[in-house]
Every structure is written in structure tokens, then in C-alpha cells.
Length: 290
Length: 276
Image (cartoon, rainbow over all chains, first blue to last red; front, side, top):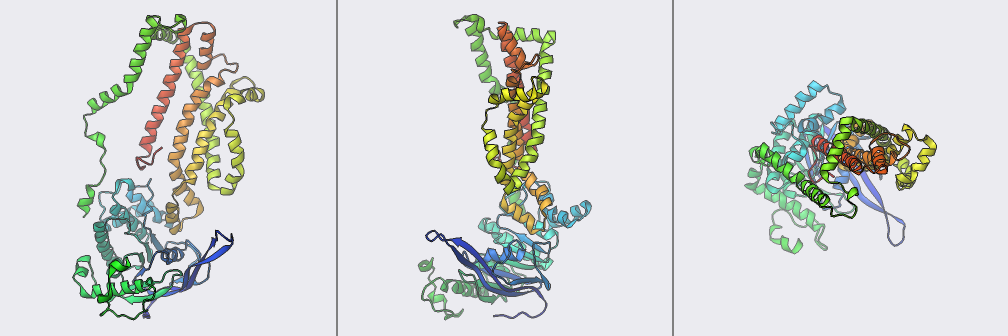
């Protein structure tokens, strides 16, 4: 497992999340462990992607870091050495469903966090315009979300989270709801935005390709309970774009390695960690697994 | 990319049409059935196709009777007094319904405690309560306003409750992730999200306030549209009776038309499919 050097931004220490589910037969409560022994140290400015099968607790993890859910099984979160006790403006949360306020225009949506922060009206307007420009939505300031396409809504959501200048961005499958073409554009734009703003990002996704394209480190999780299976460092040079990655052999190797890590967790009898990047290609027959 | 997406913006389709032709078309569509109905009525009454022609005056006679009431000034006085009652009952009803609805919707425990009583009250027919209102508030203006208040209350109240309860949890999550406190959450998320529901309730309440007026004016009134209708019926001035019925229909229709229009204008941000 890779050990971080330099200044640590986020320290996740043995996070554990349990839910209680009522058993239909016995009527008793059963413990369901969503997240187990999750420890991770993230350096400032690092882009971390989290991939794993459905139900591995990826979204739960983000909710806990955002302060929206308490980790009932213990563990702690520190950002810059400060304990996280609830939601605050040092973290920006971007959800899959955009969650824009439909009664607010683009501009007023982006200003929301600034209002919470107590920024004056004049300054709010200036900051919002700056971020509208960053996500290339000039001319749409006075539009309502229902007048925008999915990709544009997601850009508003990103601008809204960036506007109050959080130190950490938490992104929960933000591009899952847009079409494939828009997704690629959004990914390229996110890469550009991240290189401009140098935010620390935790990005949850189902897509291995997306994780490798965007991240410096990819955290691969196991299904129920969600634990860290392995952390894969993505050493591909930046700046990256979708076009670059399509032509990169290293990219393919890393994608394949993560794919293999994810899938031997699901195939009974697979030898854990037996294969390495080079020789697994022959063994992968997607149709037998999917 | 941006250019491609700009095309996806929805443009109001009514902008393209010639406004005069569009307006004429709309007027024709809206009045067609009514005009046909009035013609059939006129012809049927003139040909005395009904058993008691005196109870079935032609439209032109009704219009003449109404004009007579207007010239003498009775019509306006009756409209004024009735509208005052309706508006007063409606306004006071909103003052009770909206805050109560917000509280019931927002505070779950309070809502659960109060709900059974609300269900019982809501299902009491307003007309059944007329004698009770007369006992409590006499036969003056107060009891009339109270009857309207009671009848109007439920639509706004229930819509407000469901408006507050149906706020998208994702929006609450988004606001909370930005550190929004309870008070701000209520003001900036719950209230705006519930507003279209509240407005729909208000619109129905406003229409109901006119409908219930008639019942209210059955209790010892000596002026008002409902009173005038009953008075002329009792005195066999049937054209005038019909005249007042028509006036009440016009007021009710106009009111709901105006309110629907305001509703559409105020909530431009709502999806077409999302509006009720």
C-alpha cells in the first residue's frame, strides 16, 4: 500500500459504519456492516477515486466525510488536523442527481453556499460570475435548472460547490446520469478545473476508466463489508485528457489491473492477487463474467 | 460543446405564432361550447319545449333582468357584500391554514399528534355545521365569515402539509452539506419547495370561498348574491334568479382563471409535468 509523503489533508482513521436491518423471519435486528476498517490518508491537492462493487459503502463513506452521517461503528475523520463533527463549508459535496434548487436561477444556485457563508450580495455576484465563466455557462445566469441539459446542470452543481471555496471536493458519481459523450467532456473539464484550483478531491465512481483518467490514486474496495482491497497509484503524466488516455498503453494496463482486482473479488475460487498487469490479459474473458 | 448544448434550451413555443391569430383561436376554443349551449337554451325556451315555461326563461330575458338589476344598483351592492364575505373568510382561512400547515408538515411529532383530529374535522360537511355556526356566532356577518373560513381552510392546509413533506430529500442533503442550519433550511429550501403546493391549495380555497358563500348566505342574510338568488326564487322572479346564478358562475370562473394564470407565471421554474 502506498504511503503518503508530505502534508496530509485528510486523515480517515478506522471508519466503520453499521446499519441495523430487521430480519423478516426472526423479527430481530441484524447488524449490517457497510464499511469496515477504512483508513486512508490523503495529501493536499490529491485526486482520489474510489471504485468498488455496488453496496460496498462508497456513498456511505462520502456521506460520513461530508458530515451528513455519523459513523456508528466508530473511527474518526480529520481535515487539516481538525476533527470533523458535521457538515461545513470546508467540504463541497457534488451529488449524482445534481440537487440544484429548481426555484433558483443558475446564478442564485451558485450563490447559495456564499449566502450561508455570509458573503455580501455584491461579492456573491462577482464570485458567482467567476465560476459561471470557469464552467463555461456564460449567458445562462438567469436560466432555471429545468431549462438546462443534464451536462449543464452538473456544471452548475460543480460551480456551486467550488464557489464557496471548499478545501475538499466530495463527488458521488457525478457523471453517472449524463450521456457518454457529455461524460467525456465533463471529465476533461473537471481535469482542467482541478489543475486550475488544485483542490483535494474524493471521487466515487462505478467506472474504472473514469477513475484512472481522473485520479492520482484509485482506492479499490471489496463488497460487503466495504474494506480497502488495494490502493493503486496512477502515475500517468498530467495534464490528461480522454484523447491522451485512449492512446496510452500505460492507461490500459492500469485499467486492466483494477478491473482484475475488482473482479476476482466476485469470482469464487479466483486466486487473490495471482496475476500481475502483464499476463492477465489472456485470462480476461468479459462475457463469462458479466 | 457549449454550443451544442445551447440548442437544447427549451424555447417557449407560443413566441413563434402570430399573437392576434393565436388569441382569436384561443377565444374561439374557449367560448365554443358555451355559445352553443346558450343558443340551444334560447331556442328551447322560445319554443317552450319545457313543461313549465315560466321556470325556464330564454337567455335574452335573463340578460335583460340582470341589466335591470345593474341599472338599479342592486347587482353591484350584492356583489360587493358577497365578495367582502368571501375575501374575509378566505384571507382569515389562509392566516390559519398556512402557518398551521407548515408546522404540521415540518414537525413530524406535532403532525402525527394533530392528524387524527384533522381527519375528523375535514370530513365534516360544512353544510352540516351551519346550525352550529349559527348557535356560536349568531346570524350576523361573523357566522357567515366563519362558515367560509371553515370551508376554505382544508384545501390550503392539506396542500401546505403535503408541500412541506414532499420536499426532495436530495435538496435538503445538498443544503445541509453546505452547513445550512435548520432555520435557513426551512426558509431557503422547504418553503420555496412547498410554495407551488401552497398556491394550488390557495387557488382551490379561493374558488370554494365563492361556492360556500351561497350556503353562508342562507343563514339570515338580507343582502348578497346568495340571498338575492333565494329572494327572487321565492318571489317567482325567475329571470332574476337565473341572472344571479350566472353572476356567481362568472365570478367563480374569473377567479380561478386569474389565479391559475398567476400560478403559471410565478412558478416558471417548475417542470410542466411537475405542476398539479
